Image 1: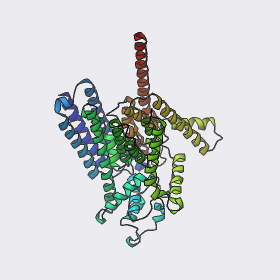
Image 2 (image 1 turned 90 degrees about the vertical axis):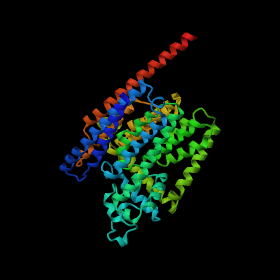
Image 3 (image 1 turned 120 degrees about the horizontal axis):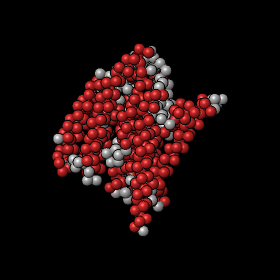
Length: 482
C-alpha cells in the first residue's frame, strides 16, 4: 500500500511538472519587467519539481526497506508501467511546451539544416546569414525565421562531430511543413527524447542483470530534471549519456571485449569529452597492450567521425570550432560552486591583475582539482558505475559553468549507484535558473548559491565520514582476524 501511494504521488507530481512547463514562457528582453515575469513562470516549475523529487525520495527509502519489485508486482509489468509513465510525461511536454529554459536547440536546428543542405556546420555562423530576407535567398526553408532565435550568433558552432551527424540526420528528416522554428525544434527534441528513453532501457537492463528491482530506474526515468531538459529543452546530452550507459553495459557484460565499449566511449567523447576519464577507469588493471588497443580503436573511430567535418577546407572547420571553444573556456561561467568563490578570492588577492588573468588562474585551479578527483577515483574505485558517477558529478561541482543538464550525466547512473549529495543537487541545481529573473545583468545572488550548494556539500561530508568509518571497521576486522 505504501508503494502504491508513493507511485501515485510521483505520477501526480509529474503531471504538475508537465502543467508548469506547458504554461511557461521566458522573456529574455533586458528589462526588469521581463525578469519579474520570468520568476512568476519559474516558481510553479520549481514547486512541482520539488514535489516530484520528494516523491522519488520516498520511493528510494521504500526500496531500501522493503523487497519491492520483481517478487511483488512482477518485473515485466513493473517495466511496462515505468516506461509508459516515462514516455507519457515526455511526450506530453514535447507537445505542450516550447523551449523556454534554454534556446540551445535552435542552434542544433541551424547546424543540422545546414549540414542537410550540404553546408559544413563549422564554416557558417548565424550572423553570416542575417542578410537573408526573402525565401528565395534562404539556404533552406525556415532559415530566416530561425536566425533571431539562436544564441551567440556571432560564433561558429561549439558542438562536436558525433552530435553534428545526428543533427544532420535529423535535419534531413524535416519536411517543408515542419520548417518553422517550433516544428523543427520539436523534431529535434523528439530525437533526443528517443536517446533519453534508450538511457532508461539501458538502466532497466543493468538492474535486471544485477537482480535488483526495476523500480530503482524511476530515480531517473520519472525525475523532473531529465524531463524538463530533454523533452522540454531538447539538450543533446541524452545522446552522450546513452552512449555512456551503453559502454558501461558492454563492459559489465564482457569487459574483455575492449572494442565494444571503446567504440561507444569514443562516440560519447565526440558528443562531450567528459566521458574520457571513464575510459581510463574501464582500463584500470589491464596491461599496456590493452590500453594501446583501446587508444587505437578510439582514435580510429574519432578520425572516421570527425575527419569529414573538421579536416576539409584546409582544416578551417576545426580552427573555427577551436576558436569558439577557447572563448567558452575563458569567459563562460554560471553557478559554479567552487569557481565563483575562487574567482572572488583571486580578485581580492590580486586586484592589479586583468580579468583574463584572474579567470585563467581560477579555471586552471578547477581543472587541477578535477584531475585530482579523477586520479583518486581511479586508484580507489572498484565499481565502474560508482566511479563514473563520482567523476561526472565532480566535474559539475568544479566546473565554471554548472547548467542543470550537465548533472544528468551523473544522475543517469543513480539507479545503479546512489549518492545523497548528487540526489540533493538534482533538486537544488535548477535553482540556477533564477538568473532568468535578472535579464538585465544576468547575475545570481550569492545567497541562492549558498542555499543550493550548502546542503550538497554537507551531504558530501557526511558521505565521506561514513566511508571512512566503514573503512576503519574493515581494517579493524582484518586486524582481529589476523
